[in-house]
Image 1: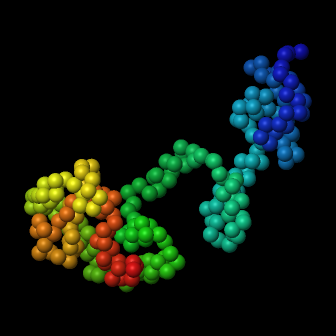
Image 2 (image 1 turned 90 degrees about the vertical axis):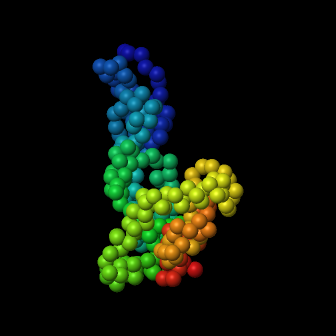
Image 3 (image 1 turned 135 degrees about the vertical axis):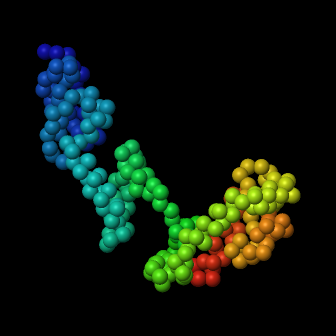
Length: 237
């Protein structure tokens, strides 16, 4: 009889070694294992001890079922059920295929203006209702004459103009490349308009209407991301 390490009675994950069966062609000891669910399977000792096999297959089925429930956890599940699902999936790592699938699904997509603002300020039930009501095609206040893309791209086009670049450079030089809020010098800086770009057309390239901010401080300003427009529509208070 071939030599083998006696692991009879030992438990690894959901499998308990029952008895030695034989040695396969790769000189690996094959054991009879009993799963916690009662099923019996044949596996080599190394396969089980290295966590390549954790159960008879019941664990994988439970995780797939739990993952499905988690995707639809907002449809009638109690808080206790949701917590059980989270506990079962805790520590599980997403496969490379799943990550690539998610990346391909959102590739090239951009979140709407109101959605980005809502995410940065935290969703509330009231905010969700307002956001949903505004998505009514031509009824949406952002729609106007159907030329929202042209208006959205107006500033992007302006950024490539010489006068915009010169105004931006002059703002940085005047402020000595220092954030006017946190006073941190250097890094990723933004030339911010004190009075909104869309409202004060005559002050777009006025030096006194500009200030140097870092990206973090820029997000905290009252005009970042069209907050003033969303406030007028009731999105933000």
